Image (tube, rainbow, N blue to C red):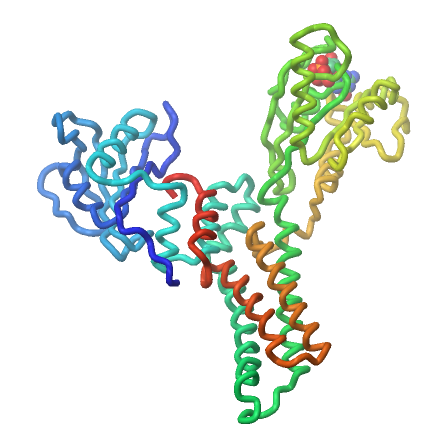
Amino acid sequence: MSLTASDDTIAAIATAIAAGAGSVAIVRVSGPEAEAIGRVLFKPAGEQRWESHRVLYGHVHDPSSGELVDEVLLLLMRAPRSFTRETVVEFHGHGGLVAVQRLLQLVLAAGARRALPGEFSQRAVLHGRLDLTQAEAISELVCARSQRAAQLAVAGLDGGLQQRIDGLRQRLLDQLAELEARVDFEENLPPLDATAVQDALAQVQQELQQLVADGERARLLRDGARVAIVGRPNVGKSSLLNALSRSERAIVTDLPGTTRDLLDCDLVLQGVPITLLDTAGIRATTDRVEQLGIERSRSALAGADAVLLLFELSSGWNLDDQQLLETMPQGVPLLRVGNKADLAAPGAAAPDVVAISARHGQGLELLERELLRCCGHCSEGGSLQLALNQRQCDLAQAAAIAIERSLEAGRQQLPWDFWTIDLRDAARSLGEITGAEISEAVLDRVFSRFCIGK
Ligand SMILES: Nc1nc2c(ncn2[C@@H]2O[C@H](COP(=O)(O)OP(=O)(O)OP(=O)(O)O)[C@@H](O)[C@H]2O)c(=O)[nH]1
Ligand SMILES: [Mg+2]
């Protein structure tokens, strides 16, 4: 890669920060001044040598006042044996909010610059320690909300995606080399078997299309879905949230208008992370607080990937339910759910209604299955080994389309150089997936989505 990392020293808190949470916090420093900064701030207890890849124990003092700031472990990893391939110093101090922020301030005052989101990983990529797909997999692992999403991220971390894409790119480049040689020296070379080239290209294209399809299927596993439960007051929305999350998160009473504010709850259904939203029952009301709650219900609908429209099966689908259905946002998958089936006559539900009893836990398995289907989940997603993320899918798709144009040039028996233009585009797109061919602007865009300290 021709791009280079900037040569200053960067620092950030690499662990989550919250008062009272996390007994250890890490400040990570990377760059040519990392060790010098460590030596200014940290005093080892007793006789300890500053050796690479050894843990030192001691204290951090504020150099201006001499005040003791924290008791820490210091880990020195001299270049190139570190995550960024630069010299890295990690201060492992106490967690929480205050001490670690103070430590970072001292590191910055001693000459480091605050790292941008993803900047450590970006340096790791620029120094050839990771390829782009591996760096993205780290981010995906940290963000994973289900076991399946974590498994897919780990497969990427291992370099599986890079090898797969690099292999396909290599096969394109092999064909491209043959074709380009013919463009320049056709008369000196044995004739090229156009059918064999087309077969080879079609094979690469097909494998790319399969990867794109798998990536789409994995999207739900990785990104999850926001599901809003809506309906008239008292139909059992909060009871359903409690039943699905197996908790008593929401207040349930027999008074219509109980829920006033949005309530969310995270759960995992068959490996898919779901954020379930309980909303205020929608009805005409003069109560100001309830009106505000209803406005929030409506705005929750706007951001939902799927809607569960709940009604009372026992009293039947009525005009108010119908009116509510008609105000639902277009294009968002919706499931009609008839609650209080325990009070309804058997067989009361229409064929497109899922009958449940939130109070008695009846019909919930079917509801979960229908909900996942409604969100576009298919069970084969469980067997995926590798999955491209959205950025990678878009590039793989672009490569497949460019190959198609090249195949079309072949079908029209155009000269070799018409084939090569599109093949070069395809190879470039695949190179952008792994970072083998990438511009600084693209790199900055990818890493800006990472967390700080990564
Ligand atoms: N028999 C029966 N009662 C239920 C069932 N589900 C909920 N209920 C009762 O219906 C009443 C209303 O339940 P909630 O869950 O508070 O209803 P809601 O839709 O959240 O109501 P609002 O927040 O007011 O919009 C409570 O008394 C529940 O116990 C059910 O499946 N069967
Ligand atoms: Mg409620």
